[in-house]
Structures are given as structure tokens and as C-alpha cells.
Image 1 (tube, one colour):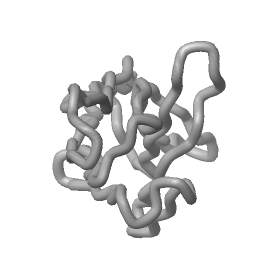
Image 2: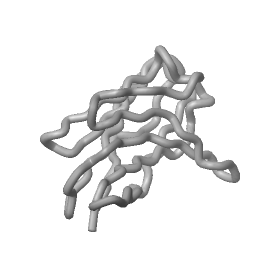
Image 3: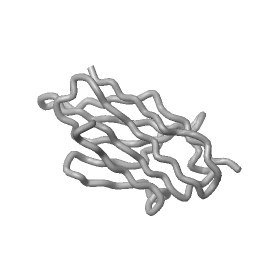
Length: 119
């Protein structure tokens, strides 16, 4: 069993910054990748960023240059530094920790953290 908890969301004005984090605990044998997604009410969940165990990172085009994903492997924690925030970044942000057990990859989701960008 893997437990995933996000924190660090909040309310910020346009142009501001937030740094949510996501910590995984439990039966973690091998984390292959950690992802951030976001979802607005009535819309599909959207992939935002990924960091793999090898250090590879990638981003949704609309957040490139503004968001930075990083991880602390010793703490099984991933961060999302969000700068120059826009109202359209307002969403619930979810973390997915992908764990390898034998030949199978398992997705482990957190409960989400609300990010609101508003003046």
C-alpha cells in the first residue's frame, strides 16, 4: 500500500508563486516517475509535469518556463514550483506516484490540493 499526500496549495494573485509538494509513504520499492496533473470541475484531468527516477523532466506546453518539477528521492517527495501564475492555472492539482513492483507499474494518486489564482 502506498499513501500519497499533496500539500502547499492556496490562493495567490496573478503573477504570484506557489510550491505544492507531494509525499509518498508505505510499501515503496521502486518509484519510476512522479507526475503532477490538474483538473477543473467538469473537465478531464490534465497532465502538467513529470520527473522520472533518471531525472528526466517534461512539461505541458502552457506551463513551460513558468513551472519547475523537482524531486527529493530520499524523502520520496516531489515539488512543483509554480511562478508567474495565471487565473487559468486555477485547478485542483493531483500527484501520481508510479511504482514498479516486479513487472507491473502501479499508479498511486493523492487527494489533490486546490490552487486558486485570483485578484
